[in-house]
Image (cartoon, rainbow, N blue to C red):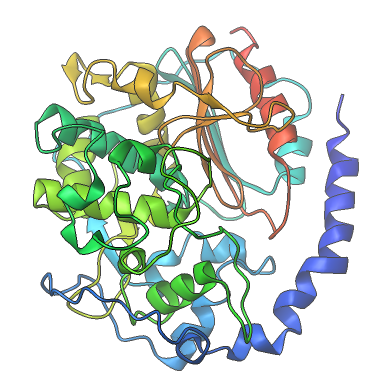
Length: 421
């Protein structure tokens, strides 16, 4: 049995020793200007798409605040206030929000309070057979506040891909991305299929590594230029990206892959991501609150950040998990194509010793529970679906940078899923 209080103490010591100085004392982090560090990486595609919603040209103070997004001293706050700091595009609540039923009689296993504290929990919810059996809010969160989902957003994009495929807007998962976004021709994404993008096997030369400073990594350049400074569009960096492996060969987790995938969906459907999400997911789900996608820039050309930018309430994230558990059906109506959830969650093996031993279409295997799968986001965001017990868990968190708690969370999620009513 894990001693969560000891874990919390150790995490706190590690944070004090290693993480805090990176924000409090690193002058490069505070003063770095991506334009000087990333010359030659300017976007090549400047076709305007209309006025950006909720866009404000970022002032120096706003830029400084945006760079504190992951600061462990304030990230419980910044994760719920992202819409006040970043450009974003709203996703309307359903015209007739649905009620989520509640059931009594479920007791969380072990010492939940210690687990929640040790794993930096902001909010957590458990559903069993479609009814809420446990719900908890911490750190001044409330049921109507949105929390950033980070890479849980990728799973939403995969849902939209399945819908576009069923509608014939995407002809085949084996189509090259260039069929829908020709600007990719001649670069590292030329010849990469939609399936390759879904599986994070594009072969494109990028590492999900955020090295800032005088010699920033490509991922750092993209983040700061597109998201912090609003001077470029995130997906446009895919146009000039290089190639390091044949498409389909090697798993390489890269948010740029999902950014390109999101742009492909927009080109295939003719609709921006926020409108697709509202019409094809939020409305049929009966979502109770407006959500939003963070957006890049510059003004007039910014788009929703497909790979990391979705923000929603705890219960509305749970609706997404229940949608997957119910094979894409809501109130008897099919929202996701028949069989698409099975395709999304058919895991290709990765490291069997890792707490994430498999990856499907923008979804993870978390732990070793048979058939369970997850949407997972940076800093401890989870939608966990356990089909055998018909359980959905959502955990929203504020991990400090570098925290590795997947094994602890996977173990506790398995305990919760296997706890009877």
